[in-house]
Length: 498
Image (tube, rainbow, N blue to C red; front, side, top):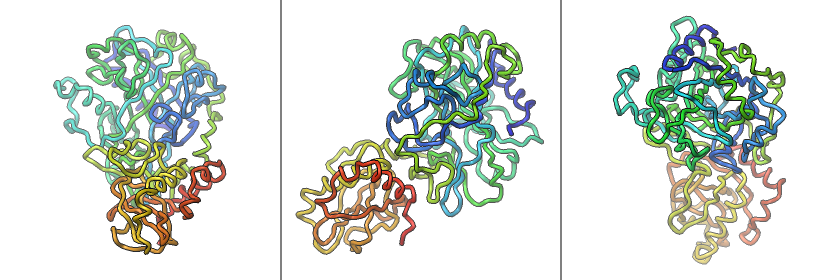
């Protein structure tokens, strides 16, 4: 169950404190339409590098448009007029043995709509945006955050405002509740165990100042800006159009893990919470959002108290079909780490990109597929062979030694890394892409058998069957059945072999 209504209202009063208009509603989206590595904004048509929990329209896909959302026959949110899409990275628990599970989302998520500012407008057609940066690992502002009345110019930069737009609310219903956006980093597990007996609420405020022209931008952020108090305040120059304000809230049952050894991280491998982020694609019925902004005036904020909304009786049954590449992935439990082999990076420096986000090689070396290791193992193998076809095979030793090669990576590397010059039996074969300089093991006939990580690598690997070089052809891995088999092998994370 969610947290008590009186605490909800107390936080809503705080959130509405700066508003020129008090119209608002909170939209329950109690059912996920998916938990998967999908992100049509950041990875359109691709497998995303990390998992999201997704709510809203049943038309959602990895390459969705607003028309797709509106044409769907269901939504997992509480009113039929809204077929928008909402998604965030979920909170995960990493056990001491490295296995991970998704922390229960109590009540799904809530999307708050606040009518703040002067003459706020509804989201324009085809509008989309994101808030947050998945690679941040450090809150750079003062702790605790001073009252807004004491904010300096340094507190009001767009970067500072975006950091203050993330909140981690410790829930203990028998004590005084914390304000929304009270703290901007995720509490340590010991603190959660001792103080947050009713769980953790993760919050995200989206920017609401629009440039008035673009419904999207290359980084999916720069067409929007925060007002100078995050929730409300003055919009910066060039962003003079105020849009309806959007706020995400998700409650996690962290209390289920009280006393259990391990740590909480986001599905992005972020234990700090500073890299929390969210995405949104507009899917309200034409003209309806403006009607709701004007007409939903009940101070309760309950959608049931606004007669304009139509209750969605089918919210709990709305689901989407996953892309074929993801059907074998289990988003709720993974025996060896985070789904997608996402590395845990604690900061405080910016996290290193991983998965499909890695930049292309800037110096000669082995090619790296753009799509990440899932769904492109055939390309990986073919790329290794192609990259080594000349001159390495002609120079390859005949005694199974390993050759140095540059292989910028996705996220995978061998657990049993070997330094250059150390031999290993050719019957123990792995294909690996690693983040740094790697070594390529060759067999007695000069055939590349495996790539190995540098000593000290902590990422994982995927085993495939080694074949002679002339049989390693890309088309052998292009059939759905064989690719599905490779994905299943990858998902088993065979990095505990000895």
